[in-house]
Length: 480
Length: 88
Ligand SMILES: [Zn+2]
Image (tube, rainbow over all chains, first blue to last red; front, side, top):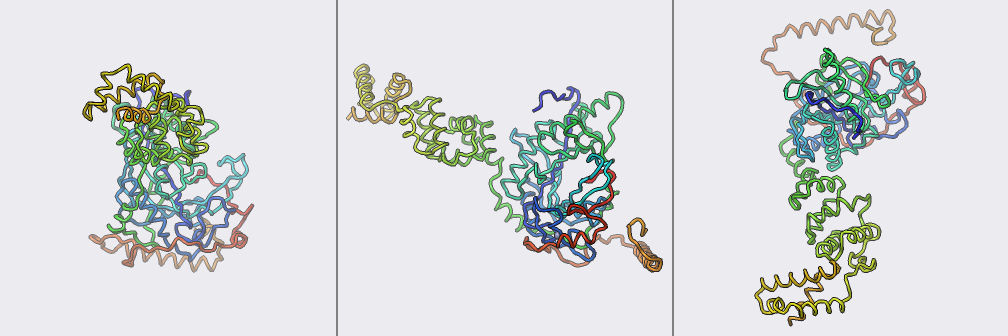
């Protein structure tokens, strides 16, 4: 978060909808067999179809459609019969002078995204379309308006995209960030995209407007493009919202347009005026037939969906209801399977989550296994290791793996020698004859209670260095 | 119109295409005159759906050959007049 950025005055509310373009991780493009590859030499992944040469015909990539429907279901969308459409325009980034997309009959509609903070943002639609080529502007210092000419690379033209359009239900920059990060986590979980913002396989445009707090109206929005990171998105939204508030304050209004985020200048600048849908002369693509998913297909997709981040968080908070924040972080790091397995191996869930959140913030934790982790947390819970000692043993587990008890011994954390412990226990028995009688002669409940008493005394005397299990063995041995 | 589409045509071609375009416009006018009330719009004349291809690579074109067809090229890319406004 950028501390010096101005936030909105209390009487204004932020209204944001996000349009996220996601490149699908297919081998080939949407309508032809050219490679869908990020870093190829310019214009080496092109053919008559993606160059829009006369006589070429598109054939839809079945894998792209499968990915798009999987994403739709992961977002809780209804997957519907859909048709492809032509969006006509005259920028050179599409050689055929139109982009094939979906217009009034998209594949996925009416979904939602559940964020880690418990809020829900509606998804209006998630439609299939093709990406455009890349234009770079030469001369005039790289500024588009002053360019002497432009260069076009069509490698990206025809790469399959899904555009996910949220409802204007985002109310803060933090929520916008959480939305993109949750969406990214879902994309990675279902494996339909590598979702790399820095390589442009995940791109965010933000529709920003403001309204008086408490009102339900939707005022004029501006669409902010050229957002290259989650951080830029936050800055761009804050800048744009403030601009709208200032305009209203001076008796003016923003007008609907596309604006560009200028990262260096920290501001948005006007782009083209927003086209109406009519300007694009949408019509159904005559060269492609409708997509009609069957109920069986959709059911099969649902069956194959992996566990999604929201479900993973839920799974952890079921185990540890007081550790919701830790659960979010642990799921984001992909450590929740380890945590669940360690709980199954006997670890106390709340203590474990706290430990993992605070002390397993490392890139590589593959040497830590569930049994070792459970044993370590068991030692901490039993008071055999102090918090500091537990952290040290965990750090050792991360670096070298191994058995936590052995590591604790090697680090000199070994509770105490068996003889010393036996001496302590004998001393306690002598000092507490009543309690000892109740341990020896009592029923099972009484015996457990007294075992707790003696163990507690030992732990007190040893500042938690003693091994609880060894104490129990000694007590049982002495009782015969 | 040929100028708008950046096509270099001879006078004879312009005459021929003007006639053909006129025929197309006449045909569109005929269709417009039809009464289509109650008929649902179709996107495709064939009753087919779900036509897909496998996600398998096919060879792309040779870049030099591709760029040799362009009016101008530079650094392996198509060189085009400056773009006014913005593209995405
Ligand atoms: Zn191609």
